[in-house]
Length: 311
Ligand code: NDP
Image (cartoon, rainbow, N blue to C red):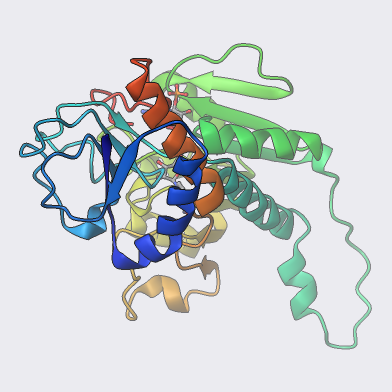
């Protein structure tokens, strides 16, 4: 009997519990699914930190920790996790992110805001939006989410530039850059900049007063990655000077974003409340089940986190 502990919030259990049971039932696993975080015999822990569990050392039979979420910056540093840690890669979550990013890129590319404001009886037809093939979009992060967004944007004919840690070969229609040296080149094309990096020691504050200067004047920043990727004061200053034309931000250093935060009242900032995408129950439970099957068969796990790299 494989003991699976679902350690997340009560709200998460409501959303995922039944679906997970049903999905596990489609496999040959002989399992017990529990939400009792004191069940120290658990072999797999489906995990979201909101449940308050931080000490994994008491689970002596533990084989893997399976994160419910894609972002694992609050888990990687947990020294009591001595078994493989897997992050969530879920086609439902990916599709949601692709749609959110594409929508916001098109909003800025087509200057939809300008036309929404222009309902004043004046027929101003002097300016046409450029074609996507004349628009450069840079995506920092070419992982599960960044690459899916890049592929959709290239299919719409945008000129897509992508930056990653390791060199990428043969990505169709995407100009790729990597490592510290490649960053300023990738940023130099960023008429629209999308941040889809994980939060690590290396990526924190990657958008700061110095890197902001390497972005073309009048650019737009879209951040569904993590709030700490951006130095907020530097961004606000560059919006003030016009270096950055607009910032669409889904994630923040502090969430919920405090009511008094200057982002709320800045007309050149769009705040969305960390809704760019979310793990979908039906598709993510398949990933969790697949990983438990693999663990029981002694195979390597899908989407195992490299604890040294931090993602
Ligand atoms: P992945 O781990 O699949 O991809 C991460 C990418 O970032 C990889 O391309 C990686 O490079 C690159 N990267 C990491 N560190 C560096 C570095 N130091 N320099 C250059 N590139 C780097 O992550 P996902 O695509 O699944 O998710 C990305 C992030 O999106 C999550 O960590 C989370 O923070 C955020 N997210 C936000 C959501 C929202 O609703 N707002 C929902 C879900 C996720 P390489 O390919 O070389 O390894």
